[in-house]
Length: 128
Image (cartoon, rainbow, N blue to C red; front, side, top):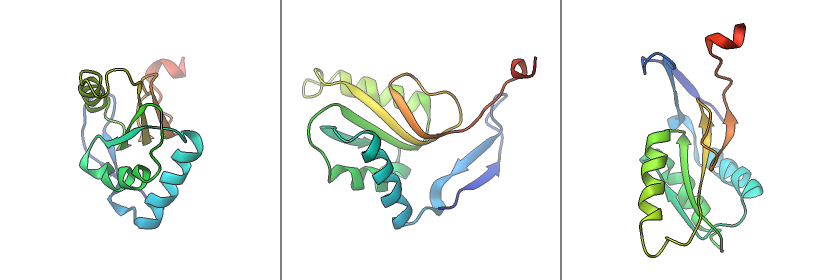
């Protein structure tokens, strides 16, 4: 598995990005297996971004019962929140819990989202 990290400006807190385009089919299979070990039951899986479609396709084969599972390659909090809100306002899904799983998180995750790899993002007050 390889990850390409490129320096670009996202603002004050984060000035770099993770690009998972280098993942091949075996990498996505491995990531799907890691998520299934940690979250084996879900009734629906949805890719939050286009880059997460390979992951959602692999996880869709394992749909059983449980919450709606939102997946993404790298955490985008606003996109996750918007997708969660969409599911929570639909009759078909309104009584189901909505949880999320991402491969990488550059910032702390909301309580309902888990990350396979949480990067250690330290702020200025960490050094005090």
